[in-house]
Image 1: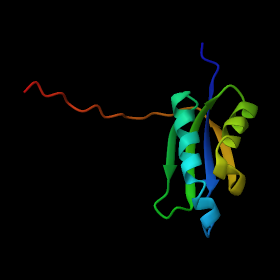
Image 2: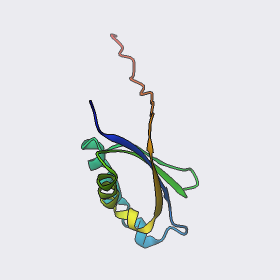
Image 3: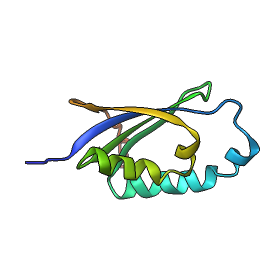
Length: 100
């Protein structure tokens, strides 16, 4: 049985988003990619108005979750809250293969 837990994390993106923070975006993207590759992050979503960021993590514990959040360079500039979630369903579209 899988003992991993899923956590939805909601971050408040700072307003205004300063040049100093913009310079951290490449590091943030790299950290997000690494968490995806390691299977620790399932979703990463930014609101259209760029004030909220949602991330769905898989972790063994809350302390592991906080370790993953700390790996995100922008997290030290954002307030966040998280909840353990029971159900997460998603649809992934796979392109149709053409034999022509």
